Image 1: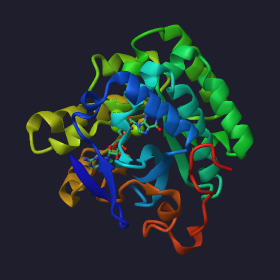
Image 2: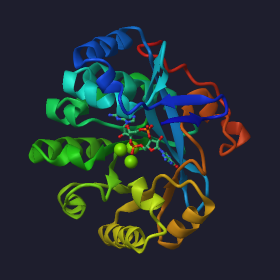
Image 3: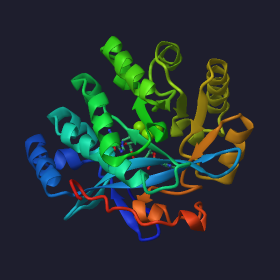
Length: 287
Ligand code: C2E
Ligand code: MG
Ligand code: MG
Ligand code: MG
């Protein structure tokens, strides 16, 4: 699947067979080279407050600007980076660059970053986040950490400790891809999440009674626990109307904006004129 993204025709390369084309070792070498060659960049996608229809958050999504393949999507290299340990330097750069970008936005706009399971296992996520906040000067209250359910399957007590420290610092904890894991409900009672993001597969399947039921019960569950709800992957007005009727608080999807580079993000029509500022360029290790 190759899809266009953004006005300038950014294209994401998502070949199903990329891993099969080259051996794991060759790909690892390529990824390692990409890190030193600064071939990564961050794109930002808006998350809207449903009540005000204004931009509440920008989610940072990493891309690999490959010299031959063009823009490579994260699902083509994040897993490899995790297996090889390269996720460590890569995500240190991601978190710091995202914080550096976000300090130039209006303070009302929050920053959401995705974190990897490996960073919880290595146990230094808190230090990485702390360093990024100190170097950038970003208020921790503006930072959201998105984790997927699979992160939580192992080493629960260590993760809980990291979560508590991040929250004590002022950051918001988000459970990403809600509904795709094995025991979403128990994660909400066992971990101190502030927010859930209902996986886009349920929004894309909204026509079916089953998907609507999952979203509706997720909203009831979250509300009962004092947790707010984001719906991701909203592509049409009709999907937006449906999830609004089901009571979600925040909305994200191509309907409102695709992920775009920082300088383009701040120029997007969803921002007012006075939000129009120049960002530092997001190249790997840059600055
Ligand atoms: P995610 O965190 O659940 O991000 C949402 C994905 O859905 C993004 O794909 C986004 O571009 C896509 N999306 C947003 N709106 C729509 C829509 O309306 N329709 C459709 N069809 N898709 C939509 P992307 O950027 O390819 O990222 C895929 C996954 O890669 C992310 O899922 C996240 O798990 C991971 N990822 C991305 N950036 C990072 C990163 O910096 N660090 C780590 N550890 N993982 C990342
Ligand atoms: Mg996410
Ligand atoms: Mg998600
Ligand atoms: Mg995901």
